[in-house]
Picture (cartoon, rainbow, N blue to C red):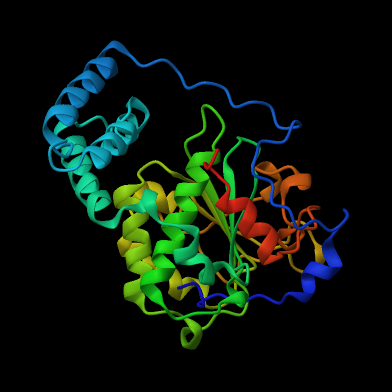
Length: 313
């Protein structure tokens, strides 16, 4: 689904400052301080959480007589951490949060995102077009999209690969971390290379509907003339909070930050504002293709073995 982006791989060879590595960083490096715990809930928020908990457990989860294993999985998923994400996403509206939880539980029951196996989506990962590698300064896992490596047009499986990747990120999140960051190279994009709008919409819908509060930051790297039109196409499918988290940066020609605002004007809700990646990442943890010092080269066998092992212990 990400063939809409393209980026020259030659930049990779020019940028690295460390020895080449094929192993992804899947645990928080020692030089990043452990994330601080969230602020305590107010009495009113505690009350709303208890109310949602009372609604979800007896009413929304699958009957154990129908499927004992799935019931146990749903109970594990519907913990306070998850309930709070839906409450925050709905601005603490209990009725709305319960409704969204019900919708997501039904989706998970049919889509089974937590049961997607590495074997099912491995073909989508062979070229390294989507890679989990490292953490930002807040301890959030980083997902890199390298669309020049697009190798399939199996859109349903591409979406399942995205979901598989999100589920893997959730499993490696350090304590007190609930979000991911997504970095995408946006150079040399055109309407002729873009995937169907329906596929992009489905991706955004899945992320927004079923993974609320999981998206922390998105950076579109090396913008082109296409980006304004792209924003117009995807904007209707995103809520204002998500829009405000999507930023622009440029790291071409080995320059760590190069601002050229002629190609894009941020929207009123913040979509497309410029960002300095070094406000959010330690150079040691940022891939050299995206302006950092981490000289990671994707080697499928090594990467996939590491990703497949997440949560297997």
